[in-house]
Length: 318
Ligand SMILES: NC(=O)c1ccc[n+]([C@@H]2O[C@H](COP(=O)([O-])OP(=O)(O)OC[C@H]3O[C@@H](n4cnc5c(N)ncnc54)[C@H](O)[C@@H]3O)[C@@H](O)[C@H]2O)c1
Ligand SMILES: O=P(O)(O)OC[C@H](O)CO
Image (cartoon, rainbow, N blue to C red; front, side, top):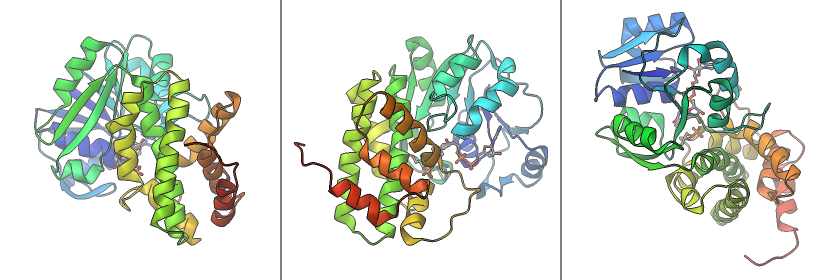
């Protein structure tokens, strides 16, 4: 049976979709939250209005996952702590990261953290363009499932495909996780220029040059260009930079508009920008948009100053 750890918006949406294939266990960190969901058959805190099918079992406390795959729908900067606490109960099975980002403390992506904490598990990542609510409502969605072990990847692709969720497969975990991590940084930049009233042309330029910058780092780290050109990279960039359903994009909008943003909302791109900039600087890789976003989220630059910084760079070939 599939277990999903993390009863946020994404973990809950995946549980609702996977319940079409068979029973699912959904583990919540907070016992009160699990009890609330058992009583109401909804996740009012994170995915209000969506009914939880009866074959989703809601648990909390010790992880009593069976021997099937376990999906980890935990925010990136919390994954390491979660694995330190519960990794021992998750050995010898496929562990599928469902988060997007780079860990600030270690510089690792989700599969790197899983490999380090659970060496007997097989790490995989599920990523690509998808809003939790779309998945939960049964709207058509296509994602990338990346697993370096081809056999496990094929089994996961089949087990995690549902009538509304179509999975493509790759062995390129590096490309898949970098695509999902880096597009959030560019989405913050796009939100900021739209929020500051700098126009759609500026957004298109940021998306395009952002994609070039994503590819530059990903290739240097061994990713396949095809992965970045697929759902995990270009696909998710297109979705996240253009929809105000995205929290990263909305966070950027608030920076551009100079308005407050609820700090409890999960915005993966802010910490990831810092982590990626540190890595890129050490590797001497030019990532000007990530540089600008890091300065924006650190409050070191205003949007107009960040844009001046980008526009005044030396002219170059495309
Ligand atoms: N929401 C979406 O549309 C969506 C889509 C695709 C991918 N994702 C990715 O899924 C990941 C989770 O996002 P979300 O939307 O579910 O966030 P969310 O804010 O809705 O929920 C996060 C959940 O993680 C739990 N959590 C926090 N710290 C924890 C810890 N230390 N141990 C265990 N659980 C902990 C919280 O209790 C909460 O239930 C992110 O990396 C995000 O990029 C989200
Ligand atoms: O709300 P966001 O910005 O975390 O985006 C959600 C998904 O990553 C979109 O694919």
